[in-house]
Image (tube, rainbow, N blue to C red; front, side, top):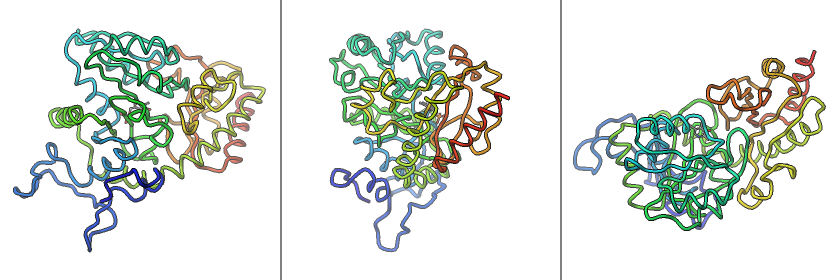
Length: 373
Ligand SMILES: *Cc1c(COP(=O)(O)O)cnc(C)c1O
C-alpha cells in the first residue's frame, strides 16, 4: 500500500490509498468479516488489533488529515473516545453552536461531575485563545452546524496551551479536502464518516486522526475497551464512498454557491447563511481557513414554522431528511430537532448533493411558491 501522501495530491491519494499491492491480490481491500485470526500473524482479535478493512479506511483518512487515523463505529463514538481521555475535574470549552450529540455528551458528563463545561462563541477567537491556556479540552466544531460560522483555526490551534491541553476539531462539515486541522496545530481532528466520506447515507462510521503517538495509542485503547469498533461492511462502504469524495465535493459546493446566491435574492427568504457569500459574518475567516466553502446552506424563510414545514414537504428532488454530505440533497427545519429549539423557527438547513443545479433550484423555488399558497 502507498503509505506516504506527501508526493501526491489529496485527490489522487483518495483514489490510490488503502489498496493491497501483492501480486494476485484484489484491487480493493475485501470485506473481511473477522473477529479472530490464526495466532502467530500479529493479529489475533479484531477489537484489539483491527482488520485490514478498517485499516484501509484509516490509511485513506489518516493520509488526508496528515496524521494517523483510528476508525470508529460512528462520529459520536470517535468523539466519545476523545472525551474518554479527560481526567475527572477537567474543564471543557465547547462552542455555543455545537452538534447536539456532542453538547448532550458534554452536558451529561458535567451533570455527573466528570468535568465542567464552558461555552465559547464559534467566532470569539480571543475566547478560544484564552480557553487554550485554561481548559483541558478545547472542542471546536467548524464550520458550525447549522449556523455555518467558521472559527479562526489558524489562530486558535497555534495559540499557547496549558500543559496537556487537547485541542480537538470536529471538521466534518469541511471534510479533510477543505480543512486539515492537524496541519494548523490541532491535537486531533474528527470526522463523522457517516457524512461526506461515506457520502451515500448508507452507513455510520467515524474517524479520529492525530499526529501524537501517545494520543493515537490512547484512542485505539479507548476503542478496544469501549468496543466502539467500526462495522466491517460500514468500513468497506466508507472506503468505497471515499474514492469519489473530491468529485462529489467539488460539484456540490459549486452548486451550493449558486443556490446560496439565488436564495439571497428570493423574496420569501430573509436570511441566507453560506460561508462563501461576501455578506456572511465569517466570510473573511472562511476565505483564509477553508479551501472550499462547502455544501451546507442554512436559510430563514419569511414565515412561520408551519410554512417552513410545508416547504420541506413540497420538494420533489430534495429529500425531507436529516443528515448531510451525501450524493442526494436533503433539507430539514432545524428548530424541530430536539435540543435545537433555540434556532429561528423557519430556519431550513439544506445539504446540497450532486444533482443538476437547475433542477435543484426549480425544486426549491417551486416548493416555496407552493407552500406560500
Ligand atoms: C453527524 C455529525 C456528528 C455525529 O456523527 P455520527 O456519525 O452521526 O455519530 C458529529 N459532528 C457533526 C458535525 C456531525 O454532522
